Length: 187
Image (tube, rainbow, N blue to C red):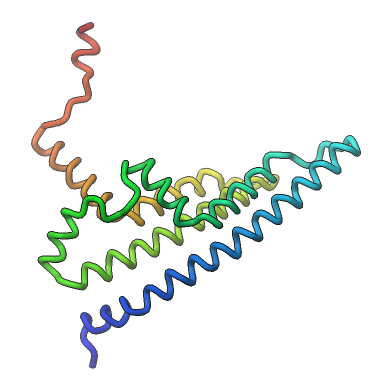
Protein backbone atom coordinates (compact mmCIF):
# COMPACT_ATOMS: atom_id res chain seq x y z
CA UNK A 1 0.00 0.00 0.00
CA UNK A 2 1.50 3.30 -1.10
CA UNK A 3 1.41 6.21 1.27
CA UNK A 4 0.17 9.68 0.40
CA UNK A 5 3.64 11.22 0.10
CA UNK A 6 4.82 8.64 -2.47
CA UNK A 7 1.62 9.17 -4.47
CA UNK A 8 2.26 12.92 -4.52
CA UNK A 9 5.91 12.39 -5.44
CA UNK A 10 4.91 10.26 -8.44
CA UNK A 11 2.26 12.82 -9.36
CA UNK A 12 4.87 15.59 -9.23
CA UNK A 13 7.03 13.72 -11.73
CA UNK A 14 4.18 13.52 -14.25
CA UNK A 15 2.97 17.11 -13.85
CA UNK A 16 5.59 18.54 -16.20
CA UNK A 17 4.21 16.47 -19.07
CA UNK A 18 0.68 17.62 -18.17
CA UNK A 19 1.88 21.22 -18.32
CA UNK A 20 3.41 20.60 -21.77
CA UNK A 21 0.15 18.99 -22.93
CA UNK A 22 -1.89 21.99 -21.78
CA UNK A 23 0.51 24.40 -23.51
CA UNK A 24 0.42 22.36 -26.73
CA UNK A 25 -3.39 22.21 -26.67
CA UNK A 26 -3.46 25.98 -26.14
CA UNK A 27 -1.30 26.46 -29.25
CA UNK A 28 -3.59 24.27 -31.36
CA UNK A 29 -6.76 25.98 -30.08
CA UNK A 30 -5.09 29.36 -30.59
CA UNK A 31 -4.49 28.62 -34.26
CA UNK A 32 -8.08 27.36 -34.54
CA UNK A 33 -9.43 30.55 -32.94
CA UNK A 34 -7.39 32.78 -35.24
CA UNK A 35 -8.64 30.89 -38.30
CA UNK A 36 -12.21 31.16 -36.99
CA UNK A 37 -11.71 34.89 -36.39
CA UNK A 38 -10.46 35.39 -39.94
CA UNK A 39 -13.47 33.42 -41.21
CA UNK A 40 -15.83 35.63 -39.18
CA UNK A 41 -14.04 38.69 -40.54
CA UNK A 42 -14.62 37.37 -44.06
CA UNK A 43 -18.32 36.83 -43.27
CA UNK A 44 -18.52 40.36 -41.90
CA UNK A 45 -16.98 41.71 -45.11
CA UNK A 46 -19.47 39.77 -47.26
CA UNK A 47 -22.43 40.92 -45.17
CA UNK A 48 -21.28 44.54 -45.46
CA UNK A 49 -20.93 44.27 -49.23
CA UNK A 50 -24.40 42.68 -49.54
CA UNK A 51 -25.95 45.31 -47.23
CA UNK A 52 -27.21 42.74 -44.75
CA UNK A 53 -26.44 43.57 -41.13
CA UNK A 54 -26.44 40.02 -39.77
CA UNK A 55 -22.74 39.72 -38.92
CA UNK A 56 -20.79 41.85 -36.47
CA UNK A 57 -17.15 42.81 -36.65
CA UNK A 58 -16.30 42.60 -32.97
CA UNK A 59 -16.78 38.81 -32.81
CA UNK A 60 -13.97 38.30 -35.31
CA UNK A 61 -11.76 40.64 -33.33
CA UNK A 62 -12.48 38.74 -30.09
CA UNK A 63 -11.73 35.38 -31.73
CA UNK A 64 -8.41 36.69 -33.07
CA UNK A 65 -7.52 38.23 -29.69
CA UNK A 66 -8.35 35.01 -27.81
CA UNK A 67 -6.37 33.02 -30.38
CA UNK A 68 -3.36 35.26 -29.86
CA UNK A 69 -3.68 34.87 -26.07
CA UNK A 70 -3.73 31.11 -26.53
CA UNK A 71 -0.75 31.16 -28.90
CA UNK A 72 1.25 33.25 -26.46
CA UNK A 73 -0.08 31.54 -23.32
CA UNK A 74 3.02 31.97 -21.11
CA UNK A 75 3.28 35.63 -22.07
CA UNK A 76 -0.46 36.18 -21.53
CA UNK A 77 -0.28 34.57 -18.08
CA UNK A 78 2.73 36.71 -17.23
CA UNK A 79 0.92 39.84 -18.44
CA UNK A 80 -2.23 39.17 -16.41
CA UNK A 81 -0.14 38.14 -13.40
CA UNK A 82 1.87 41.35 -13.60
CA UNK A 83 -1.32 43.39 -13.94
CA UNK A 84 -2.99 41.88 -10.87
CA UNK A 85 -0.03 41.27 -8.54
CA UNK A 86 2.69 43.61 -9.80
CA UNK A 87 5.17 40.85 -10.63
CA UNK A 88 5.20 38.36 -13.47
CA UNK A 89 6.37 35.17 -11.79
CA UNK A 90 4.45 33.33 -9.09
CA UNK A 91 7.71 32.78 -7.18
CA UNK A 92 8.46 36.47 -6.56
CA UNK A 93 7.16 36.57 -3.00
CA UNK A 94 7.02 33.12 -1.49
CA UNK A 95 6.99 33.73 2.26
CA UNK A 96 3.92 31.55 2.81
CA UNK A 97 5.24 28.75 0.62
CA UNK A 98 8.54 28.84 2.53
CA UNK A 99 6.62 28.40 5.77
CA UNK A 100 4.55 25.55 4.32
CA UNK A 101 7.64 23.94 2.82
CA UNK A 102 9.32 23.91 6.23
CA UNK A 103 6.14 22.54 7.80
CA UNK A 104 5.09 19.88 5.27
CA UNK A 105 8.03 19.31 2.92
CA UNK A 106 7.63 18.37 -0.76
CA UNK A 107 3.87 17.88 -0.40
CA UNK A 108 3.58 21.68 -0.55
CA UNK A 109 5.34 21.84 -3.91
CA UNK A 110 3.03 19.25 -5.46
CA UNK A 111 -0.11 20.92 -4.12
CA UNK A 112 1.02 24.34 -5.37
CA UNK A 113 1.72 22.90 -8.83
CA UNK A 114 -1.72 21.24 -8.91
CA UNK A 115 -3.43 24.51 -8.04
CA UNK A 116 -1.34 26.33 -10.65
CA UNK A 117 -2.33 23.82 -13.34
CA UNK A 118 -5.97 24.23 -12.33
CA UNK A 119 -5.48 28.00 -12.60
CA UNK A 120 -4.14 27.68 -16.14
CA UNK A 121 -7.12 25.49 -17.07
CA UNK A 122 -9.55 28.03 -15.58
CA UNK A 123 -7.75 30.79 -17.51
CA UNK A 124 -8.19 28.83 -20.75
CA UNK A 125 -11.83 28.11 -19.93
CA UNK A 126 -12.42 31.82 -19.32
CA UNK A 127 -10.86 32.72 -22.66
CA UNK A 128 -13.07 30.20 -24.47
CA UNK A 129 -16.17 31.53 -22.64
CA UNK A 130 -15.35 35.06 -23.76
CA UNK A 131 -14.94 33.86 -27.34
CA UNK A 132 -18.30 32.05 -27.20
CA UNK A 133 -19.97 35.13 -25.69
CA UNK A 134 -19.67 36.89 -29.04
CA UNK A 135 -22.32 34.66 -30.61
CA UNK A 136 -25.89 35.98 -30.48
CA UNK A 137 -27.84 34.97 -27.38
CA UNK A 138 -24.82 33.78 -25.41
CA UNK A 139 -24.33 35.31 -21.99
CA UNK A 140 -21.01 33.89 -20.83
CA UNK A 141 -18.85 37.02 -20.92
CA UNK A 142 -19.10 37.82 -17.21
CA UNK A 143 -18.45 34.24 -16.20
CA UNK A 144 -15.52 34.13 -18.61
CA UNK A 145 -13.95 37.18 -16.98
CA UNK A 146 -14.53 35.64 -13.55
CA UNK A 147 -12.83 32.41 -14.70
CA UNK A 148 -9.87 34.38 -16.06
CA UNK A 149 -9.51 36.30 -12.80
CA UNK A 150 -9.90 33.14 -10.72
CA UNK A 151 -7.39 31.34 -12.92
CA UNK A 152 -4.82 34.08 -12.38
CA UNK A 153 -5.44 33.99 -8.61
CA UNK A 154 -5.03 30.20 -8.63
CA UNK A 155 -1.96 30.33 -10.89
CA UNK A 156 -0.34 32.68 -8.41
CA UNK A 157 -1.49 30.81 -5.32
CA UNK A 158 1.44 32.02 -3.22
CA UNK A 159 0.74 35.68 -4.01
CA UNK A 160 -2.98 35.17 -3.41
CA UNK A 161 -2.33 33.54 -0.04
CA UNK A 162 0.13 36.27 0.93
CA UNK A 163 -2.35 38.94 -0.14
CA UNK A 164 -5.18 37.35 1.88
CA UNK A 165 -2.91 36.86 4.92
CA UNK A 166 -1.78 40.49 4.81
CA UNK A 167 -5.38 41.68 4.43
CA UNK A 168 -6.53 39.54 7.35
CA UNK A 169 -3.66 40.83 9.46
CA UNK A 170 -4.49 44.45 8.63
CA UNK A 171 -8.17 43.92 9.43
CA UNK A 172 -7.55 42.13 12.74
CA UNK A 173 -4.94 44.64 13.95
CA UNK A 174 -6.85 47.68 12.68
CA UNK A 175 -3.93 48.89 10.54
CA UNK A 176 -6.04 49.82 7.55
CA UNK A 177 -7.51 53.15 6.63
CA UNK A 178 -10.03 53.90 3.97
CA UNK A 179 -9.16 57.59 4.07
CA UNK A 180 -12.82 58.55 4.52
CA UNK A 181 -12.21 60.63 7.63
CA UNK A 182 -9.90 63.01 5.81
CA UNK A 183 -12.29 63.07 2.86
CA UNK A 184 -15.29 64.10 4.95
CA UNK A 185 -13.35 66.58 7.08
CA UNK A 186 -12.21 68.40 3.93
CA UNK A 187 -8.48 68.13 4.58
